[in-house]
Image (cartoon, rainbow, N blue to C red; front, top):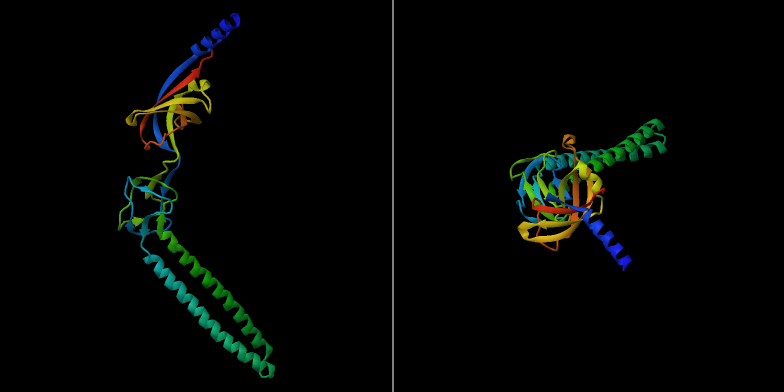
Length: 255
């Protein structure tokens, strides 16, 4: 009996030392992609709108190929010229080699043609590599989704110029959702990674559980707060970045 009472006292003492901390949070995607173009060019067509769900590999938008078409023609012309030069030099080399075998031309002339033949073959290899490089650029004109996700922002329209440095589309992965919130520095010693929490998203009537996935220093140092990211069970509900949530954390006091 005494052992039971002692155990009960310990349990009640432990419960009383737990304080509930309620925080406000926002649903975020921990895998948000900013889609940009690799090459400059006019946008031919945009295939998605804000709010669309897309699958990995789905075409997002296309860039006009006019600028690359001209480069391709230049590379093809350069290769053709070098191949024609090779044909001429090869013909001369074969002829001079026959003459040299009959002692009708000096060896020096044959060696010079051999050197030209070697150089022109190198030039052809370079021209072919250049053509392959230009042809490979065509695959970057069709920009596709790197993963499944939701288009949360579209900053481009058909006819506009695509620039490598400008974000075109922001894609949010709904399979990597987390809750983001802030906690004051004074409460930091009362929480830890992996600690469980109760999560409430009132807009969709979701009550679920989560746990602290990461604790990140706030870049705004004057706030004296830290950022918490919590993973949580979505219960297969339709949840989107930006949704308001409440978080209840049980904190162990130092008493």
